[in-house]
Length: 254
Image 1 (tube, rainbow, N blue to C red):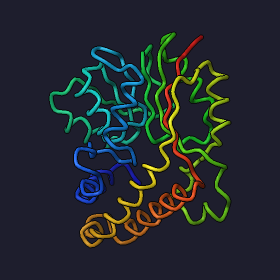
Image 2 (cartoon, helix red, strand yellow):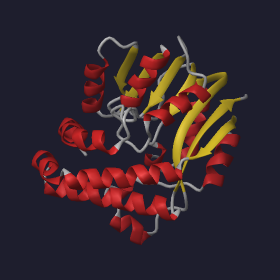
Image 3 (tube, rainbow, N blue to C red):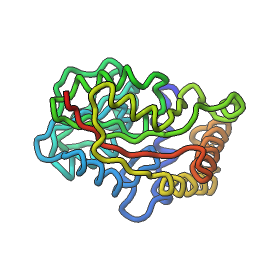
Image 4 (tube, rainbow, N blue to C red):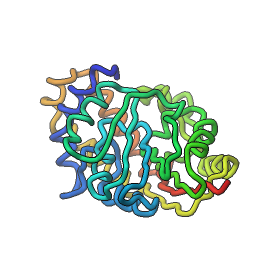
């Protein structure tokens, strides 16, 4: 998706996304996380008033704005899409949060007490170099909170079926945990979110299909078909255990 195409997609999918989540669970996220999961991860990461937080690949900033509103933290969200950042800034209003356009890596200069990477670890083919930079951006005792997709790399057949497969880089859970350890990040909390994310993926697929005509009018038939194809695959992979979703909080210890 090109940067200047972000606004039409956000506008086209808004109604379906609102309907796919349980009441109170939609906070303008572009992912499978619900508000309760975002809130819990922020709490376990120790995010509170004045805590310096860096949110990597924040998109339009829905979860980030939600966290800033609930905690009063010192929040900075960064994303490579100028269109997404423009939307995030506009929707933030008077909230105590900032958004900047930046390619990751490198990371903005820290130090930060918390670094977030929600639902976008998938896009990085090489995880450990990014994790090393995240560790360096944290204070000693600082926390890295993330979600990631665990599983063997996609086969060639799976890559042919997945739209934008060049942004889908799974990592075995054991490999991810070993990488965290090597860069000095010790996992303090780990939760499996596969079941809830499978349900959300299915609900989003159904909502997009039900609103297909209106969505296609905004983004085109081809983009709609790719959207549905990707969500059907995620729904299947999460339901069958081909992919597991993990949320964790790790602490910098050195």
